[in-house]
Image: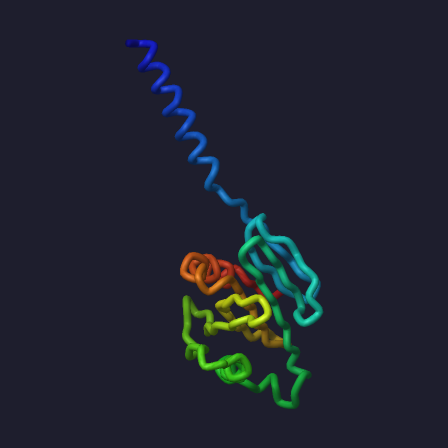
Amino acid sequence: MKKSVAVFLLFLTLFSLASCGGDSVKELQFTHEDGFSITLTEAFREDSNTDYTASYISKDVSVFVLKEPFTKLEGFGDYSLAQYGEMLRAANDNGTATELYAIDDITVFEYSFYNKEENLEYKYFNAIFKGDGAFWCVQFACLKADYALYKPDFTEYAKSFMIQ
């Protein structure tokens, strides 16, 4: 009897140690030469995408960072964050874009995109920021079917975005 209790406790201890260690995900801060940092997880790696200032990918999620200097358009620096957001929203609105809204002082909007070539639908979470010399758009993308799973992570990642 004592032996079976000892074996049971051994398995219980091993199981609890395995379950505690298996779910931990290490955060990783990415700092970019263009003047920002973002904290993601070690599942991400930097990717090269010439359309964006920076991009990061994991198995299921892509992150695209776009810096738009105020010198891009005359008077661009005078735009409010809401005006910039509306401009982005209009450029990406295929009938699925949400209105701009705030999550913990971060201005965001969402939209879906159907990729005909891949026959897949993606959903984007866009966080926008205004720095001293530029606007920033940070897009988080995943398959639309997985969006509810990843949206809380996107929110946390957006909160970690810092303009330096």
